[in-house]
Length: 127
Image 1 (tube, one colour):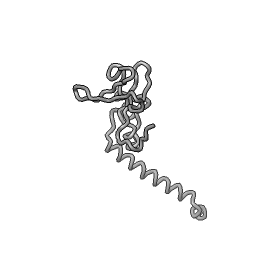
Image 2 (cartoon, rainbow, N blue to C red):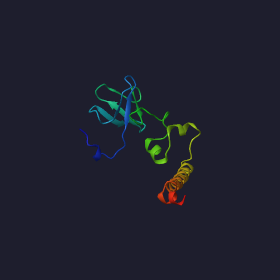
Image 3 (spheres, one colour):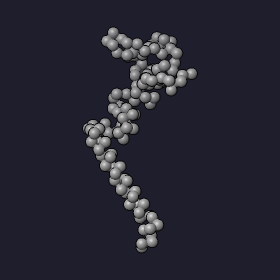
Image 4 (cartoon, rainbow, N blue to C red):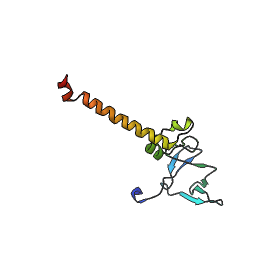
């Protein structure tokens, strides 16, 4: 059993081309990462003798998203309020998006205050 609170590294997932199964590297005792001759990280399964790039590929998450179908990481989506669909509409300027989100939050606060006043006891007494 692995205690993930102690590990300080990004989760790396691989997908088996044949079975389409995805798992986190390191959760199987047969998983190995190594550097190839070009200095790129590769995956190798000691049990079946297969690895990247021929029989496995790296994916970003357990759902199988990769660089082609998920331009924003889950962290970026949460941090900036993005969705996967944002990438398909010409790209997003993150600074502009953050400014728009801040303006939207201010408008929501103003709306909440207005609604609070409308439904307050004091306002009902004034009518």
